[in-house]
Length: 337
Image 1 (spheres, rainbow, N blue to C red):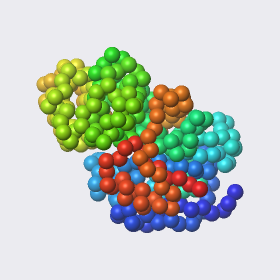
Image 2: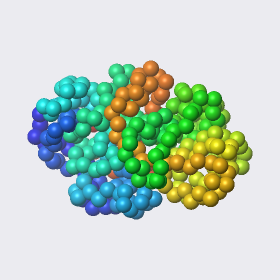
Image 3: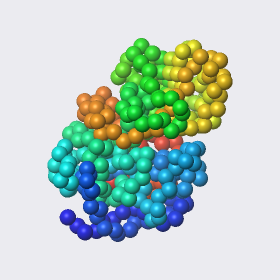
Image 4: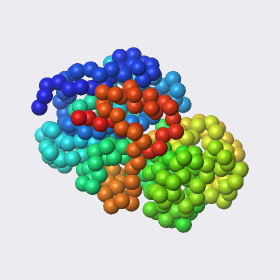
């Protein structure tokens, strides 16, 4: 085991240029943890929100982590177990694993590094038929789609609303996924289809072939048609874009339907009540058991993860620059030699 490793850190908040490749000590796994030799890292919006000090995030201030600097960003990894704490029984050295680590909290050992000390409860065995890049790309996006659509999987108080988020039955329902080509969206399309829903995907026209291949029944190019102008009688809208404009989807829903915004900002509670629409959100949380269930769907091809682009770990700044350009199809990943 080497004593040092490469890790991407930021010493100040700012744009992609603040990400630096540093040489630091390999972390020691604490009780309940394993040390993972990282092969791939999945990028997610919280990575760049954290990097720029949440200047471009609608997340409530009280929910924003305040990491001591310098800090390593990232939560999603896939790799091989290199060491195991004595109290961990579920994993052994040499196991291939993937996971979303410690989210929504923040720890000293984070994903943009050659090694990470990972809570064993946040990990699942990597599906044999899925490579490390696709496994890392699946973690946060897959868990977000799963916890919004399939099963919340925990009893932690919801920081975004008074009530617990409750997924709805999908079999035979009409579901629209806004932002369907993104990380959460393209997995949500497939999960909804696998549960028997009729799925309308909303994204730009360049992604139509991909999303139809992933199972979308109908497709709307938002650059040509506003979905709220043409779609009616939906049972569920999963808006992976969210924010202040998410209320426009209320008119597309049948009374008794549901609107699930992934990002905060919904402000049309009175209209939702008048229309009889449930609006509900949740904050994704690490869950190795749910990842194991998702892993089985990845392994048998029920769900596929699409990679927009891949960068070496040392080019993390370039990966963040790609993210800032937007219009991402699937996920961005970092690969570790």
